[in-house]
Length: 135
Image (cartoon, rainbow, N blue to C red; front, side):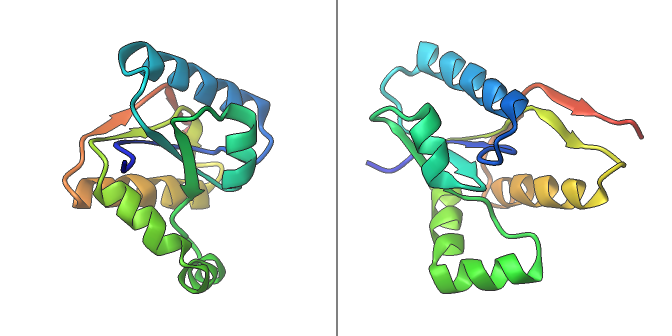
């Protein structure tokens, strides 16, 4: 069974606030679709599964946004798995937190890239609990 819901955010980096947001998103998704497969895009997929996992939760790596992470993603195959998960999903949720801020311009690139691929594949994009700024 292929994943149909993808949740993407700053997960797997031991940020308590972001992990709490993911818990909230998962709780809401499970209320509507208790058995639906969900894939979380994470910096550390195995740690995300260990922290939030259930039998219907999967995790893959975020799409690479830098040269080194791109090379690593190509050679490990994670980039192709992640693109396949996004290509086959029914809904792409960009999880909340302070993802878009002018204090960290690379963050805007990273999170925009994740969402852009969902849009390129024609997937519905839902931004959940985003804070924006200061700009």
